[in-house]
Each structure stands twice: as C-alpha cells, then as structure tokens.
Length: 169
Ligand SMILES: CC(C)(COP(=O)(O)OP(=O)(O)OC[C@H]1O[C@@H](n2cnc3c(N)ncnc32)[C@H](O)[C@@H]1OP(=O)(O)O)[C@@H](O)C(=O)NCCC(=O)NCCS
Image 1: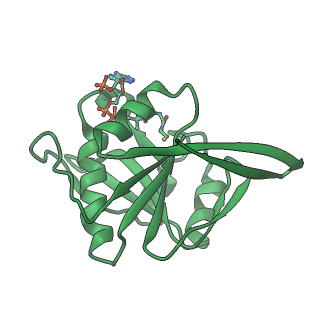
Image 2: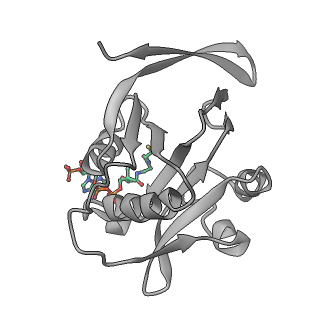
C-alpha cells in the first residue's frame, strides 16, 4: 500500500515529545546494521547515494530510525525505481527498537522528521507498507498518513522489478 502524509497540514504527535531526534552520522548508522534486514554495506551504500537516516534517541541510545530521500529513488529492498515529484520525500525502512514498540515512538519520530523536512521545503511524505505488516499500517495511520493505492511489482530480471500503481477508487 502506498500512503501519503501532507506536511502542509501538520499532524500533532499524539503524546508529548519524549525523545531527542536528528540526522544520524555514518558511525551511528553503522551501529543500526542488523536491527533491520540491511547489513552495514547496504546502509553505507544508501549514505553514498545521498539518502539520510533520521534517528530518535532515548538517553543517548537510538531507539528508532527512518530513512528519507528525494527525486530518483532506488527502493533497494523492493528492487524498484521511483521518480518522485518535487516536494515529495520518500520515507522508508522505519524501525522502532522492539522494546519500545507500541508506545507511539513512530508517530513522534514521524512528526519530528516532518518538521525537519518541511523546513527544507518538503510538502509531502510518501511511504510504502507491505501487505501483512499490521504494525506498519497501524503506525503510519497513527502518524497522519492516508492510503493512496496499491503498488504491485513484477519481476523483470533477477535484480529488477517493474511497478504498477492502482489508486484507491
Ligand atoms: C512498524 C514500526 C516501525 C512501528 O513502530 P512503533 O513505534 O511501535 O509504532 P506505534 O507505537 O505507533 O505502534 C504501531 C502498531 O504496532 C503494534 N504494536 C503494539 N505493540 C507492539 C509490540 N510490542 N511489538 C510489535 N508491534 C506492536 C500495534 O498494532 C500498534 O498500533 P496500535 O497501537 O494502533 O494497535 C515497528 O513495529 C517496527 O520497527 N517494525 C519492524 C520494521 C517495520 O515493519 N517497519 C515498517 C516499514 S513501513
């Protein structure tokens, strides 16, 4: 499912802020390897492509992270390429430490990232949530996203898939 969140209609986080937020540097990103399905090489390849990782910290420890990028996007885990219109940011690979899940951390982090990227001129976030990822769908809806439609991917080569979008009627 493809979702959007418009930043010109700010959504207040459901709880008062409890975390510190900011862009992570390479060493902090390297320490995230293993937390998601990506290894250190994959994470550094993202950094080298200009993709940025936004972290949320409790007592100096990263408890949540999400990635952001613009323009011509390589969705490595889906093996698809997307071209985003100006003003859009693609937010991907959101993660909350399993010990912190279900407490609204993702909403607070999304609100903080919204403020950071709106200041750079971003007007909309888009995210993809895979079928069956119940926590992922719940977290984006809680964060103020709305569903736009479904994306279907079709394998075109071992490393590439074509993508078809069907808007919600
Ligand atoms: C998806 C994810 C980022 C949500 O983060 P979060 O900070 O827990 O988000 P929320 O607190 O808003 O909880 C979202 C939903 O997770 C579910 N949840 C609650 N407690 C949970 C727990 N202990 N463990 C797993 N999921 C839990 C609930 O469905 C909750 O929604 P609800 O409270 O409205 O029922 C997190 O579950 C995660 O890192 N998952 C693995 C990676 C992933 O799937 N990323 C999403 C890619 S789009």
